[in-house]
Image 1 (cartoon, rainbow, N blue to C red):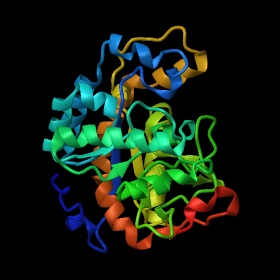
Image 2 (cartoon, helix red, strand yellow):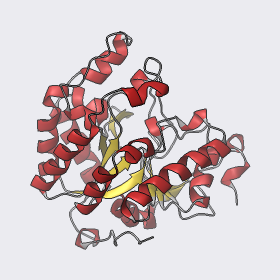
Image 3 (cartoon, one colour):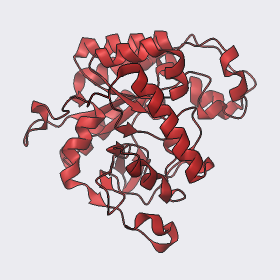
Length: 312
Protein backbone atom coordinates (compact mmCIF):
# COMPACT_ATOMS: atom_id res chain seq x y z
CA UNK A 1 0.00 0.00 0.00
CA UNK A 2 1.42 3.37 -1.02
CA UNK A 3 1.50 6.23 1.48
CA UNK A 4 -0.53 9.34 0.60
CA UNK A 5 1.44 12.31 -0.74
CA UNK A 6 2.68 14.89 1.77
CA UNK A 7 -0.36 17.16 2.15
CA UNK A 8 1.57 20.12 3.52
CA UNK A 9 2.55 22.13 0.47
CA UNK A 10 3.60 25.79 0.37
CA UNK A 11 0.10 26.80 1.46
CA UNK A 12 0.82 25.32 4.89
CA UNK A 13 3.50 27.86 5.75
CA UNK A 14 2.66 30.15 8.68
CA UNK A 15 1.33 33.44 7.39
CA UNK A 16 0.11 32.03 4.09
CA UNK A 17 -3.38 32.97 2.94
CA UNK A 18 -5.83 30.61 4.62
CA UNK A 19 -6.58 27.50 2.64
CA UNK A 20 -10.05 26.09 3.23
CA UNK A 21 -11.07 22.43 3.14
CA UNK A 22 -13.02 21.43 0.05
CA UNK A 23 -14.85 18.10 0.11
CA UNK A 24 -17.33 16.06 -1.91
CA UNK A 25 -19.52 13.39 -0.31
CA UNK A 26 -19.72 10.83 -3.11
CA UNK A 27 -23.10 9.15 -3.02
CA UNK A 28 -25.79 8.92 -5.68
CA UNK A 29 -29.12 10.74 -5.74
CA UNK A 30 -31.07 7.80 -4.30
CA UNK A 31 -28.70 7.15 -1.37
CA UNK A 32 -29.35 10.32 0.59
CA UNK A 33 -30.76 10.61 4.08
CA UNK A 34 -33.84 12.42 2.76
CA UNK A 35 -34.93 9.28 0.92
CA UNK A 36 -33.71 6.59 3.31
CA UNK A 37 -37.27 5.69 4.34
CA UNK A 38 -38.74 5.63 0.82
CA UNK A 39 -36.00 3.95 -1.28
CA UNK A 40 -34.87 0.61 0.09
CA UNK A 41 -31.19 -0.36 -0.01
CA UNK A 42 -32.25 -3.63 -1.58
CA UNK A 43 -33.49 -1.68 -4.61
CA UNK A 44 -30.33 0.32 -5.19
CA UNK A 45 -28.84 -2.00 -7.79
CA UNK A 46 -31.97 -1.71 -9.92
CA UNK A 47 -31.75 2.09 -10.08
CA UNK A 48 -29.84 3.85 -12.83
CA UNK A 49 -26.76 5.53 -11.34
CA UNK A 50 -25.78 9.08 -12.25
CA UNK A 51 -22.79 9.58 -9.98
CA UNK A 52 -20.06 8.92 -12.52
CA UNK A 53 -21.14 11.66 -14.92
CA UNK A 54 -21.61 14.13 -12.09
CA UNK A 55 -18.19 13.37 -10.60
CA UNK A 56 -16.60 13.90 -14.03
CA UNK A 57 -18.17 17.37 -14.16
CA UNK A 58 -16.87 18.15 -10.68
CA UNK A 59 -13.32 17.07 -11.57
CA UNK A 60 -13.45 19.38 -14.59
CA UNK A 61 -14.83 22.25 -12.49
CA UNK A 62 -12.02 21.83 -9.96
CA UNK A 63 -9.45 21.67 -12.75
CA UNK A 64 -10.68 25.03 -14.09
CA UNK A 65 -9.86 26.62 -10.73
CA UNK A 66 -6.72 24.51 -10.19
CA UNK A 67 -7.93 23.28 -6.79
CA UNK A 68 -7.63 19.92 -5.08
CA UNK A 69 -10.30 18.43 -2.84
CA UNK A 70 -11.19 15.35 -0.82
CA UNK A 71 -13.81 12.92 -2.11
CA UNK A 72 -15.42 11.12 0.84
CA UNK A 73 -16.74 8.11 -1.04
CA UNK A 74 -19.16 5.32 -0.20
CA UNK A 75 -17.60 1.89 -0.54
CA UNK A 76 -20.82 0.76 -2.27
CA UNK A 77 -20.25 3.35 -5.00
CA UNK A 78 -16.52 2.65 -5.34
CA UNK A 79 -17.15 -1.07 -5.73
CA UNK A 80 -19.32 -0.35 -8.78
CA UNK A 81 -17.19 2.47 -10.23
CA UNK A 82 -13.51 1.68 -9.60
CA UNK A 83 -12.39 3.55 -12.73
CA UNK A 84 -14.08 6.70 -11.40
CA UNK A 85 -12.17 6.38 -8.12
CA UNK A 86 -8.89 6.03 -9.98
CA UNK A 87 -9.69 9.10 -12.09
CA UNK A 88 -10.34 11.16 -8.95
CA UNK A 89 -7.01 10.10 -7.44
CA UNK A 90 -5.10 10.61 -10.70
CA UNK A 91 -6.37 14.20 -10.79
CA UNK A 92 -4.59 14.83 -7.48
CA UNK A 93 -7.58 14.64 -5.17
CA UNK A 94 -7.77 12.68 -1.93
CA UNK A 95 -9.91 9.56 -1.67
CA UNK A 96 -11.38 9.19 1.82
CA UNK A 97 -14.08 7.02 3.36
CA UNK A 98 -17.78 7.81 3.72
CA UNK A 99 -18.55 4.34 5.08
CA UNK A 100 -19.96 1.54 2.99
CA UNK A 101 -23.63 2.25 2.29
CA UNK A 102 -24.64 5.43 4.10
CA UNK A 103 -25.85 4.00 7.39
CA UNK A 104 -25.77 6.59 10.18
CA UNK A 105 -23.18 5.86 12.84
CA UNK A 106 -25.63 6.00 15.74
CA UNK A 107 -27.56 3.14 14.08
CA UNK A 108 -24.55 0.81 14.52
CA UNK A 109 -23.09 -1.09 17.41
CA UNK A 110 -19.36 -0.47 17.71
CA UNK A 111 -18.65 -3.90 16.21
CA UNK A 112 -20.89 -3.24 13.20
CA UNK A 113 -19.35 0.21 12.73
CA UNK A 114 -15.87 -1.32 12.79
CA UNK A 115 -16.83 -3.73 10.04
CA UNK A 116 -18.49 -0.99 7.96
CA UNK A 117 -15.45 1.29 7.91
CA UNK A 118 -13.06 -1.62 7.42
CA UNK A 119 -15.05 -2.87 4.43
CA UNK A 120 -15.28 0.56 2.81
CA UNK A 121 -11.60 1.30 3.31
CA UNK A 122 -10.55 -2.01 1.78
CA UNK A 123 -12.58 -1.28 -1.38
CA UNK A 124 -11.26 2.28 -1.72
CA UNK A 125 -7.64 1.28 -1.23
CA UNK A 126 -7.99 -1.56 -3.73
CA UNK A 127 -9.12 0.98 -6.33
CA UNK A 128 -6.10 3.29 -6.02
CA UNK A 129 -3.37 1.51 -4.07
CA UNK A 130 -3.16 4.59 -1.82
CA UNK A 131 -3.80 4.48 1.92
CA UNK A 132 -7.10 6.00 3.08
CA UNK A 133 -6.53 8.18 6.16
CA UNK A 134 -9.74 10.25 6.38
CA UNK A 135 -13.36 9.49 7.23
CA UNK A 136 -16.68 11.33 7.18
CA UNK A 137 -19.75 9.80 8.79
CA UNK A 138 -22.91 9.66 6.69
CA UNK A 139 -25.13 12.64 7.61
CA UNK A 140 -22.49 13.88 10.11
CA UNK A 141 -23.74 11.20 12.47
CA UNK A 142 -20.94 11.07 15.03
CA UNK A 143 -22.27 12.84 18.09
CA UNK A 144 -22.61 12.55 21.87
CA UNK A 145 -24.34 9.17 21.46
CA UNK A 146 -21.33 7.52 19.81
CA UNK A 147 -18.15 8.15 21.83
CA UNK A 148 -16.85 4.77 20.71
CA UNK A 149 -16.77 5.86 17.04
CA UNK A 150 -13.68 8.02 17.46
CA UNK A 151 -11.96 5.23 19.39
CA UNK A 152 -12.66 2.78 16.58
CA UNK A 153 -11.38 5.19 13.92
CA UNK A 154 -8.19 5.74 15.91
CA UNK A 155 -7.64 2.04 16.45
CA UNK A 156 -8.03 1.40 12.72
CA UNK A 157 -5.36 4.00 11.98
CA UNK A 158 -7.33 6.93 10.60
CA UNK A 159 -5.52 10.27 10.87
CA UNK A 160 -8.60 12.48 10.82
CA UNK A 161 -12.37 12.58 10.73
CA UNK A 162 -14.76 15.25 9.48
CA UNK A 163 -17.95 13.82 10.93
CA UNK A 164 -19.32 16.39 13.38
CA UNK A 165 -21.84 19.16 12.70
CA UNK A 166 -21.66 21.40 15.80
CA UNK A 167 -25.21 22.74 15.40
CA UNK A 168 -28.81 21.93 16.23
CA UNK A 169 -30.52 20.17 13.30
CA UNK A 170 -33.43 17.77 13.00
CA UNK A 171 -31.35 15.13 11.17
CA UNK A 172 -27.98 15.50 12.87
CA UNK A 173 -25.90 17.72 15.09
CA UNK A 174 -23.75 17.91 18.20
CA UNK A 175 -24.34 21.50 19.32
CA UNK A 176 -21.91 21.32 22.27
CA UNK A 177 -18.97 20.15 20.16
CA UNK A 178 -16.14 22.58 19.35
CA UNK A 179 -16.53 24.60 16.15
CA UNK A 180 -12.96 24.02 15.00
CA UNK A 181 -10.41 21.22 14.92
CA UNK A 182 -10.21 19.16 18.07
CA UNK A 183 -8.72 15.93 19.37
CA UNK A 184 -11.57 13.75 20.60
CA UNK A 185 -9.28 11.23 22.34
CA UNK A 186 -6.55 12.14 24.85
CA UNK A 187 -4.56 9.05 23.88
CA UNK A 188 -4.69 9.49 20.10
CA UNK A 189 -3.47 11.98 17.49
CA UNK A 190 -6.79 11.63 15.60
CA UNK A 191 -8.10 15.07 14.60
CA UNK A 192 -11.77 15.92 14.07
CA UNK A 193 -12.52 18.71 11.56
CA UNK A 194 -16.13 19.81 12.12
CA UNK A 195 -18.11 21.16 9.21
CA UNK A 196 -18.17 24.96 9.22
CA UNK A 197 -20.51 27.06 11.30
CA UNK A 198 -20.70 30.84 11.56
CA UNK A 199 -21.92 33.08 14.37
CA UNK A 200 -25.02 35.14 13.71
CA UNK A 201 -26.39 37.15 16.61
CA UNK A 202 -24.36 35.00 18.99
CA UNK A 203 -25.88 31.77 17.66
CA UNK A 204 -24.17 29.07 15.62
CA UNK A 205 -25.57 28.68 12.13
CA UNK A 206 -24.71 25.96 9.63
CA UNK A 207 -22.55 27.40 6.87
CA UNK A 208 -20.52 24.50 5.50
CA UNK A 209 -22.30 23.77 2.24
CA UNK A 210 -24.81 21.15 1.16
CA UNK A 211 -28.44 22.20 1.19
CA UNK A 212 -27.63 25.45 2.98
CA UNK A 213 -25.39 26.50 0.10
CA UNK A 214 -27.98 25.55 -2.51
CA UNK A 215 -30.93 27.25 -0.83
CA UNK A 216 -29.41 30.42 0.62
CA UNK A 217 -27.97 33.31 -1.43
CA UNK A 218 -24.33 32.99 -2.39
CA UNK A 219 -23.56 36.07 -0.33
CA UNK A 220 -24.34 34.16 2.88
CA UNK A 221 -21.60 31.62 2.20
CA UNK A 222 -19.15 34.37 1.26
CA UNK A 223 -19.91 36.18 4.53
CA UNK A 224 -19.60 32.99 6.60
CA UNK A 225 -16.28 31.88 5.09
CA UNK A 226 -14.83 35.36 5.45
CA UNK A 227 -15.94 35.43 9.09
CA UNK A 228 -14.22 32.12 9.81
CA UNK A 229 -11.07 33.08 7.90
CA UNK A 230 -10.69 36.69 9.02
CA UNK A 231 -12.22 36.84 12.49
CA UNK A 232 -11.31 33.36 13.69
CA UNK A 233 -8.19 32.84 11.59
CA UNK A 234 -9.34 29.29 10.80
CA UNK A 235 -10.06 27.36 7.60
CA UNK A 236 -13.63 26.68 6.57
CA UNK A 237 -14.73 23.09 5.93
CA UNK A 238 -17.10 22.97 2.96
CA UNK A 239 -18.92 20.00 1.44
CA UNK A 240 -21.42 19.12 -1.26
CA UNK A 241 -22.66 16.04 -3.16
CA UNK A 242 -22.39 15.11 -6.84
CA UNK A 243 -26.18 14.90 -7.21
CA UNK A 244 -26.43 18.57 -6.20
CA UNK A 245 -25.14 19.69 -9.61
CA UNK A 246 -27.62 17.43 -11.44
CA UNK A 247 -30.97 19.19 -12.02
CA UNK A 248 -32.06 16.43 -14.44
CA UNK A 249 -32.04 13.64 -11.86
CA UNK A 250 -35.27 11.65 -11.31
CA UNK A 251 -37.91 13.00 -8.94
CA UNK A 252 -39.13 10.85 -6.05
CA UNK A 253 -42.76 11.90 -6.00
CA UNK A 254 -43.75 9.70 -3.06
CA UNK A 255 -41.16 11.17 -0.70
CA UNK A 256 -42.43 13.57 2.00
CA UNK A 257 -42.79 17.17 0.82
CA UNK A 258 -40.14 18.41 3.25
CA UNK A 259 -37.64 15.88 1.92
CA UNK A 260 -38.38 16.84 -1.67
CA UNK A 261 -37.96 20.53 -0.92
CA UNK A 262 -34.63 19.89 0.79
CA UNK A 263 -33.34 17.68 -1.98
CA UNK A 264 -34.44 19.48 -5.15
CA UNK A 265 -34.34 23.20 -4.28
CA UNK A 266 -31.54 25.08 -6.01
CA UNK A 267 -30.17 22.24 -8.16
CA UNK A 268 -30.21 24.31 -11.36
CA UNK A 269 -28.01 27.05 -9.87
CA UNK A 270 -25.64 24.87 -7.87
CA UNK A 271 -22.87 24.38 -10.45
CA UNK A 272 -22.45 28.10 -11.11
CA UNK A 273 -22.46 28.91 -7.38
CA UNK A 274 -19.76 26.30 -6.88
CA UNK A 275 -17.74 27.75 -9.73
CA UNK A 276 -17.87 31.17 -8.07
CA UNK A 277 -16.90 29.68 -4.70
CA UNK A 278 -13.87 27.73 -5.85
CA UNK A 279 -12.51 30.75 -7.69
CA UNK A 280 -13.12 33.27 -4.89
CA UNK A 281 -11.40 31.41 -2.02
CA UNK A 282 -8.34 29.19 -1.62
CA UNK A 283 -9.06 25.47 -1.26
CA UNK A 284 -7.21 22.28 -0.47
CA UNK A 285 -7.61 18.64 0.45
CA UNK A 286 -8.87 17.71 3.86
CA UNK A 287 -5.73 15.75 4.73
CA UNK A 288 -3.78 18.96 4.21
CA UNK A 289 -6.17 20.87 6.47
CA UNK A 290 -5.90 18.18 9.17
CA UNK A 291 -2.11 18.31 8.96
CA UNK A 292 -2.06 22.08 9.38
CA UNK A 293 -4.71 22.25 12.11
CA UNK A 294 -3.33 19.40 14.24
CA UNK A 295 -0.87 21.55 16.25
CA UNK A 296 -3.67 23.84 17.47
CA UNK A 297 -6.46 21.33 17.81
CA UNK A 298 -8.05 21.53 21.24
CA UNK A 299 -9.15 18.60 23.36
CA UNK A 300 -12.75 17.49 23.69
CA UNK A 301 -13.95 17.46 27.30
CA UNK A 302 -15.10 13.96 28.25
CA UNK A 303 -18.15 14.09 30.52
CA UNK A 304 -18.77 10.87 32.43
CA UNK A 305 -22.06 10.48 30.58
CA UNK A 306 -20.16 9.86 27.34
CA UNK A 307 -18.57 6.70 28.65
CA UNK A 308 -15.11 5.43 29.41
CA UNK A 309 -13.96 5.06 25.82
CA UNK A 310 -12.78 8.66 25.69
CA UNK A 311 -10.22 7.78 28.34
CA UNK A 312 -6.96 6.02 27.73
